Amino acid sequence: MSVMTKFELLPAVETFLKQSPFASFVGGKDFPAASGNLIPTIDPGSGDTIAEIHDLSPSEIDRAVEIADEAFPAWAGLSQQERSSILLRLADAVEADKAIIAQIEALDAGKIQAQAAGDVQNFVDTLRYFVGLADKVELRNKLDVPGHDAWTFKQPWGACAFIFPWNFPFLLIGWGISPALAAGNTVVIKPAEDTSLSALYLAQLAKKVGVPDGVINVVTGRGATAGAALSNNTKIKRMSFTGSPEVGQMVGESCGRNLVPVKLELGGKGAAVVFDDVDVKATAEALVGAITFHSGQVCCDATRWLIHENVYDEFVKHCVDRLKEVKIGHPLDPNAQMGPVVNPKQCQRVLGYQDKGKAGGAECLYGGGAATVEGYEGNYVKPALLAGSLDNVAAQEEIFGPVAYLAKFGSEQEAVAMANDTQYGLANSVWTKDNDRAARVAESMTAGNSWINAHNVFAHGVPYGGVNKSGMGGGVLSIETLMDYYRSTSVVRPLG
Ligand code: NAD
Image (cartoon, rainbow, N blue to C red; front, side, top):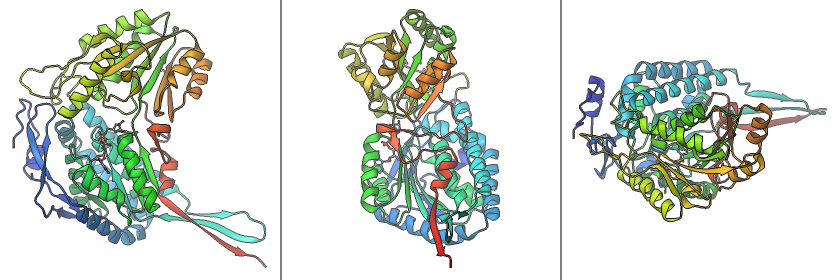
């Protein structure tokens, strides 16, 4: 096991990786798989195996949930002030170790290191945001009901389960568990089998800063066994799943059978609608930035670019000019702007969609195919621009790579109809100087989120979630998310 990168690893990262093979971390200690089965963790930038993780069995997953359940009463029983101060200590510790976690994440997920550092900071900000909200929530709310003394009382649910994908491993953990923990629930986290290391680092750090044992548990293993066991578990009180619609449906079915409330954050096929009054060059560069950010492995990305016919040719020219400058490289290379995709399977998926799109009549305006980075056998692909009819498979299905599909429109009405021609409903953007038109189009596109003159905007306090094939169950990042992690009891006393 070695990391064959010519870029220097932080001593703390080297020390951490030496713990391999990594057991899961449950109840404040290592929690190995009795089978001894291991899953390799591979640096997507080099193809090197950098660690191994334990592959838990379904019964071991069930035991982890029991441990989270046992830890719940004491954690829920702390005062909000005590709980908040522990969680703020964790936020501080994560911030202090930002460079370490970012490097682990870069090696594990193939994420450009500076972007990984942004994800770690986002985790810290998210945890602080939800702790701040929980400090102010009124748990008892008097109801004004004639003839009755009535109120509602809110309390945490118990052990909550989380299943995460590989594209934003650490950031999504922050989005998921922060509201649950702040409200007084305990959590069982199942990271993706490709990218479990930052979750394990977090669990160890939580122990160091005094988060009580059993409050934050990380279970590692394969989706079809460990993930399925967690979503089938009848003791979990809530489930939050982030990942593909296909697996989301299975998780939703299990939770439906067990009557466990479920939140599904799924894939997308977002549109960017560009009118002819914009700064064409700046807009082209912003959208190239969106599609190359984390090699396009971003659920809310703009992957269908709908461009007003008056500026289409100019827009394409600026995109191509900018794309030619994008430096593809190893995630630890400080000059790299776009890293690899996560694994060879994802690489084949991206290249396969390019081929299927072209076979279905799409024109390739730029790029495509595999990319090479000297000295590394990683999963590198070139960004690509395809164009043509929107019924093409590459315009309809989520590719999850640096591929945009372009089409022209003539009128606002046509643009909205084109944007809404999808099964997904996660995030779209509209680009225009006309604020009234921007607001109209933003509200007409069927999705959980619309952005104006920007793409991929996340502010704490603005709810983020999907509709249709992109998800259900309330979304993340706002006061509503925190409230999802309290159950409510109404109490009524008839008067006189
Ligand atoms: P995936 O659905 O293959 O896997 C996600 C997680 O589910 C992993 O931890 C995996 O181990 C687990 N899993 C797999 N099979 C399972 C099963 N049968 N039962 C329970 N769990 C199982 O998704 P992925 O390939 O890791 O991630 C990419 C997808 O995630 C894309 O569709 C992307 O759009 C979506 N995504 C959505 C959001 C959002 O906020 N809406 C954010 C990030 C990613």
